[in-house]
Image (cartoon, rainbow, N blue to C red; front, side, top):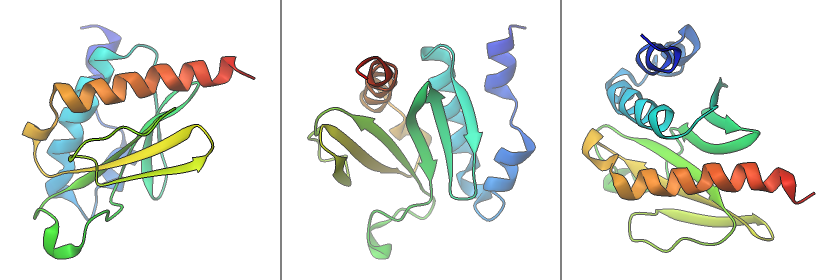
Length: 139
């Protein structure tokens, strides 16, 4: 078994703790993590109190329970995936897009099932990973 395969399959104690009050969303996170680690090299994962960050030099994707929809519009089980790009991505799937700094857009997508971890979402995350690496080169 390769190191990347074991990292895909194993969750840390911090990751489990993050989902302590949202265990029903854990399978969604596990599937997302597996796909990110399969597609993007050299990813570090940092767990904090409010989010899990996927990092390549800079953070490029984040998992949280940020409620980016009104309660009545949320699925029963959900988590929010956020990613950063150098432009605003337009899609009905994106719940919120904000520009916290000029030329840096943060996009929030609420997902409620493993089926929503599709090629479209993963391509946005892959693009965000490239943007995160390039961001450090522009200084």
